[in-house]
Length: 292
Image (cartoon, rainbow, N blue to C red):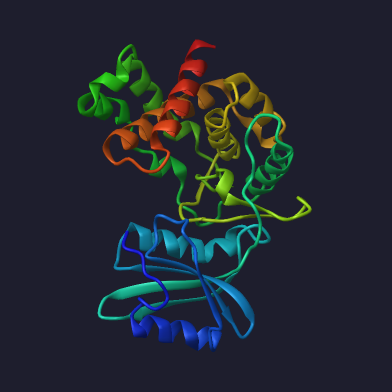
């Protein structure tokens, strides 16, 4: 997406932001964030605010609207929303000023002290109700990722039973159904850990869902494998999260097959930074589940 600095933003957008912040005395660009047109830390009369903005009606705008509502879904974990506004700047912009959260990303590598902190944080999320968030079972209604991947990149599925994997994917929506809150995109950079490690916030709530309370833990199992854990060790970590006890083996296997197909298809067709590493980890986890 095209990125805008503070000075590059349309004057109508800057005026809207200044109406909430007052004079801006400092500006810092944030490089992270692939799904917005601007990401800035602005210092206004009441301190620092993290500004995100999206230009034009798009999935990215919908995701930012979800983020603006996340503080109500995950109070004390998601950053508070200071303001949000639709701005007519020739084309529609949606801008949100979030509470500025300072911290470092989590370290998910084997032996990291952060793994305990991450487990406790995921436990807090999984204990929350999903509320109005879209059911994951509805979002995951498509089940043909492996067939699509075989058509687009046949070399990537050599040795895999596409029919078996597709059958698992078809079963997935019903097996991930539930009423708990799910972030759906937890990784090391979504955790903001304070200096004493007791203060943790979770950011980037663009695609929250409601579903089975073990699902975010399962997503992190794949992330741990990508960070260097063996699949069995990653599942041993998952067992420290109380909600993991609510899973079934069938549900986790279906989840692993679905995520591996989805992420591998995206890596082959619309690659994003780290896509190959993630699809490899997800496929490795699916193979582990199918062989266990």
